[in-house]
Length: 332
Image (cartoon, rainbow, N blue to C red; front, top):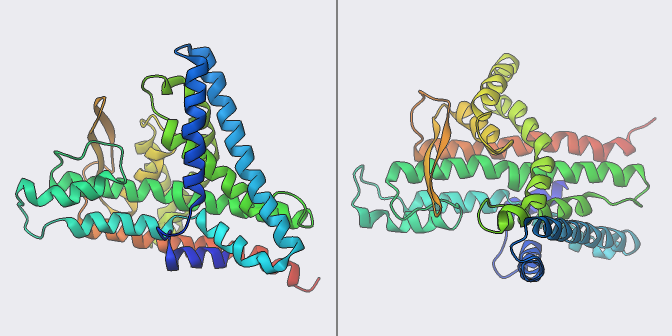
């Protein structure tokens, strides 16, 4: 797991390498077409179809990971393949690259012309769901900050958490039970379902319910562990951790997502910037709660600090994982 985290930070997600999430997305698209053809516009049937898609994809992804784990157990020469597969479940470097690409496209002048913002808006449109065509420079930076904070949990810490749970199960069962890759790929399947079907519009209001709820459930505990531990790497100390935990819970509570508001509020308080406000989507405007209200608006420098804090927190999380790996080697 530690080597996989290092590999993720070293190479990220190369475009030339087939990615498991792409395979998951391919299956989701085809299963969605079959489900909609069968269920039509009937909410009950759409919910049943969505539940079936969720079970098929999550269980199938978990079984694929378990099969690769067992292959590695029987054929140690396959260990590099397991390492690459584990790294594919982490998105630390790819998140950094995507957010920094947006920041690099921002013009240097403080009052840029509308055309000067077009490259940054285009780069941002690849990583957010909101409309970007009319965003100002400040709104682009805020969107980048909110993406960096929310997706740090979804793309890095949640899969790392489920890897650790799987590693503990694998170790306790003598390498027989589903392990780190099985649980990580199962989580990535739920996360991909949420990102592709978890929208409250059209048939997806019912078809995407099961995947979205499962993703919320699987991210719930990792998100709260991030909220408790991020202030440590931000230099807040034990008292500061408890204070920032309470502030992040208070600010994130009005958000309809049980996790997105908390994760963004945690990063907002850790870096001392205000997040939230009105976002524009294809279905209209949506007012998001203000997080760390009264603090300065985010800048490119504060977004960079968020990315650095994510890297430090990942190192902190790897410490107990190292202890888990070393425990069997200690004298009894």
